Length: 432
Ligand code: HAM
Image (cartoon, rainbow, N blue to C red; front, side):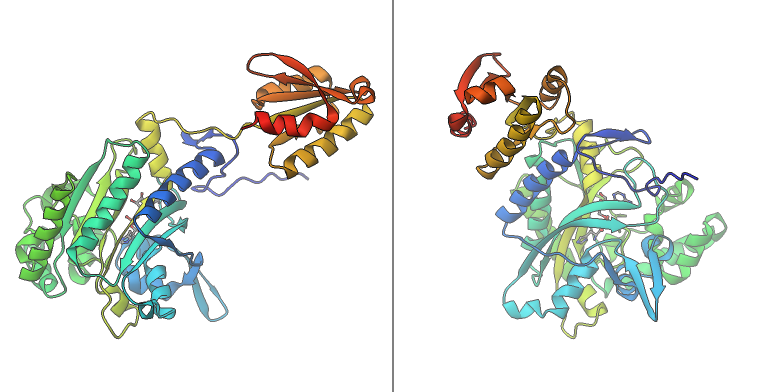
C-alpha cells in the first residue's frame, strides 16, 4: 500500500525555486532571505533589537491579550490540551512579547525597549490568496514610551521598510480609539444606534452588541457595513488627552511627509488597542487589503498581570502579503545563488578528484558544485549552465595525469589550462 502526503491546506513549503500553488506564487527561499535581510537591516538602523519567543504559548495569554470576543480567539485558534495545560500556536506576537517583557523584567534594563521579531503565526481562517493558516509576520514593539513620537516612529519605520523594498502603492489609514475612559461612552452610543437594527445584524454581531459592540465596527458583512455608515463616530467620544496625543501623531507624520487618511471606524481585529490604530493597505492583495497594521496598547501589560501600566506601541506585517505587493508592483527578487564554480569530471579518478577539489575550494570560501550522479560530460556541462555557474573546471583522466585542468569562463566562453596546484588560488582571485 502506498500513501502520499500533502502539506496541510493553508500552509505551504518554501523551496529553493519559486513555484505556484493554488494559483498563488510562493517565492524561493533566496527571495525570503533577501527580503528578511533588507527588513532586518532597516529595523536595526532604527535601533530595534531582535526578540524570539516560542511558537507555543498558553492559550489563556492569547485569550486575555487579544480578547475573547475577537474572531482570532473565538474562531481561529489552533489550541489543544496536554495534561492540564492548554496550548495555542500563537496567532500573533504582540501578547507573547509583552509576556516575555514582564517575565524577564525587561523594564529593569532601564529606558525604552525597542524589539523586533520574525516568525510564523497560526490562524484557522478560510485559506485564500494572501490568507493562510500558517503565515509569517515581522514586526516591532516600542515598550515603555507613551510619547506620541513613539507612535509616529512605529509608523515611520513601517513605511521605511516598504520604501526600502521599492513599494510605493500603499495607503495608510489612521484612527484613535481614546483611552479606557472614553470607551464606555462610545460603546453605549453605538449600542443605542444599532439597537433598532437588531434583526438586520448577523448572530455574531447581535451577540457582540451585548458583549463588545466595538467589534461590530470590524465587520466584513456588506449589509452591516452599510448600516454603520451613519453610526456615531468614536473620535467624538475620545478624551481630551487622547485627542491631543492623536493630533501630535498626525503633526509628526506630516513633518515626515507621510500621507494618511483618517478612518473613524478603524478598530482593528484585536481588543488591546488604545489611542492610535493604523493599517497599511496595498491594492495587490486580492480580497485582503491589509499588508501591515498596529497601534498603541497601553492596557495590555496590565491585562497580562503587570502591577504597573506599561505604555507600548507597535506594528506587525505579513511576509506573504509583502510578496504579493512586490509581485503586484513588478519588483524583481533574486532567484537563488549561482555557484562560482562547477567541476566537470570524466572518469573514475577524475570523479574522486572533483570531490576532493570541491571540499578544498569550499574551505577557502568558494561556492562549488560538481556532479553527484556519474553523468556524461555533456550532461554535466548542461547542469553547469542550468545552475548558472560563472566558471567550469574540466578534468578528465588525461588532465589529471598532466596535473592540469581546463578552466572555462561561462560568460565569454574563453578557456585556459591551469596547473592543479594553482587552481584554487586562481579561481579565488577571479571570484572577487
Ligand atoms: P494583525 O492585523 O492581526 O495585527 O496582523 C498583522 C499582519 O499580519 C496583517 O496586516 C497581515 O499582513 C498579516 N496577516 C494576518 N493574518 C494573516 C493570514 N491569515 N494570512 C496571511 N497574513 C496574515 C497583529 O497581529 C498585531 N499583533 C499587530 C501589532 C503589533 N499591534 C501592535 N503591535
